[in-house]
Image (tube, rainbow over all chains, first blue to last red; front, side, top):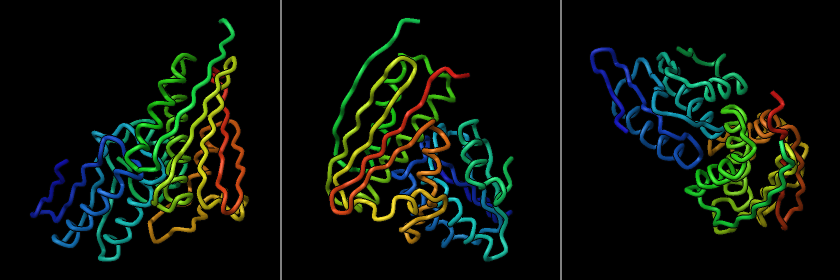
Length: 101
Length: 143
């Protein structure tokens, strides 16, 4: 999974794993936090293009990174959600917390 | 449609790498009921939540085993997920949305809420020091 940092825009695109459960969430947290330390991030994008499954473990990862980036005035959004992930966003209230495209 | 009756039991170690295995195995077992894509996603999410609870809370990421028992009777599937971990002192509190004993692990407290949202019925039986059993039921093909 290759995350992308666009220096020009200060934009970090996190490529979400195929199945975002507790197991994968642990790896993702670590990778994301390393990148957030390394780069000045003005906008953070969670890209779900390759993700077919997500459970409640994904919610904590997303909220945690959102807080982090917003604390320094950054902007957060999630893109390419399939129907299952849309439902998880809806049910958990994540839809009210960050922009979904 | 003929009346189906089928049963499956499995036991596996409480490792996070088995979360995917568990939900896919249950999903495959339920396939004979011809669930819709949404119904299958519901079941897989609920199983994933229950198994993750066993690993993080029941065994606190230490060694242990998890048992899953699936029963198909007619259009209903019943799934039990059991651990012999530390148990839950206050089940009603544990089931409240957003309640978590592990905020430091960034747990959202939505596990039981998701099981309830995605399944028709969820029963939790737990005894501190003995373990926890979660039984979930869902009718497939309600439309």
